[in-house]
Length: 148
Image 1 (cartoon, rainbow, N blue to C red):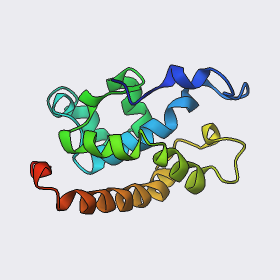
Image 2: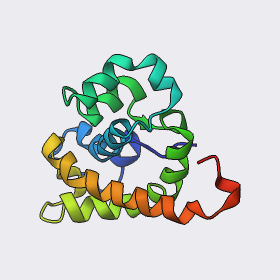
Image 3: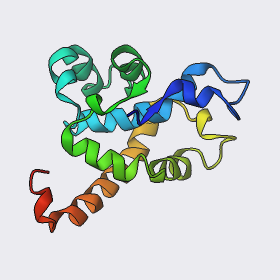
């Protein structure tokens, strides 16, 4: 299973005037949020320590992390168990795309025109957090999800 990968966005209506790496910005913003909330997968905790530190200190963007450590893909191995459950509910449902577009791309020609910057990350991060907290509330009363 793959949540997202850059090459999926090159097809169809990807703007000709943008570099290919712009197709990775939305994934990178989500990955940066995961990292900044300690929701990255065990693999990265072990194998990507320097890059995790760089993201947390804002020396590397989430998109740069995605390129360097994730081969431009967002896979279950990149996320913790809890983050995978959240990503299935939020990212896969396209709710993340809608939030991303309304917060960062509403005045732009497309969501691919969003600049990969910490300023933009700080605009979308509270929205992701709100969705995460709402999601956690819906899971709280389900006895079979006690491990989350």
